[in-house]
Image 1 (tube, rainbow, N blue to C red):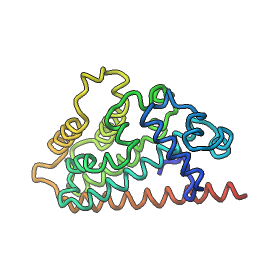
Image 2 (image 1 turned 90 degrees about the vertical axis):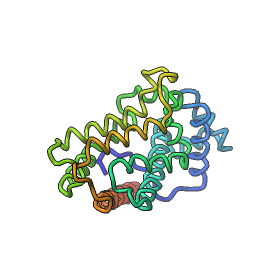
Image 3 (image 1 turned 180 degrees about the vertical axis):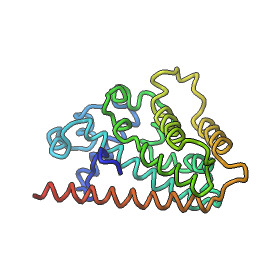
Image 4 (image 1 turned 60 degrees about the vertical axis):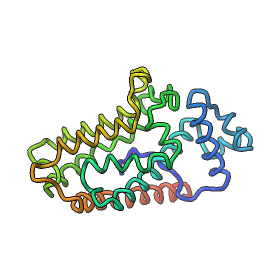
Length: 240
């Protein structure tokens, strides 16, 4: 994982679990702007000071919650891709997102473009999504897919990776700039993206699903190892 990825604890206490659960419920219901640390404390049945024993600020809590939500979503998405016979095709990678999006409430609300959920947080220059753009990994993914003949080799991998980043970031932030009544349903948008990607990136002679899965499996495993190593290093630094 990128070095700027926010660290979260691998093993957390029951109280921290309660805080995360309370924060997620309130964010989904009221959004970032209308949720305070006091609200989260009340929802979790603890004092405001107790929240600050575990988190330095509301933003730190929200960002660590986003990391946990993203990890859960990514694991579900990867499993769905593995179980889909055509999951290794670029279009199906996007389609499988729809199968699992509702399993993580916070990610579901964010991906379904509810502009109130993160509100002013998205305007911060160092917000979670800016800090954790994985352009490097997307570039590696595209390059490996090209080498394996699963993406058209004449395309510039940096450009393709950048377009993928624009799509991912745009899905989260577009509601800040476009009225909700002008935004199509997320399911339709993702299906459209899948169709565009499949048509634009797949070589004329087609692509092999198992090749795509193998590459995803490799990158996913590497990312997991790097993430766990970062968490263990973080835990060790706290103990020293």
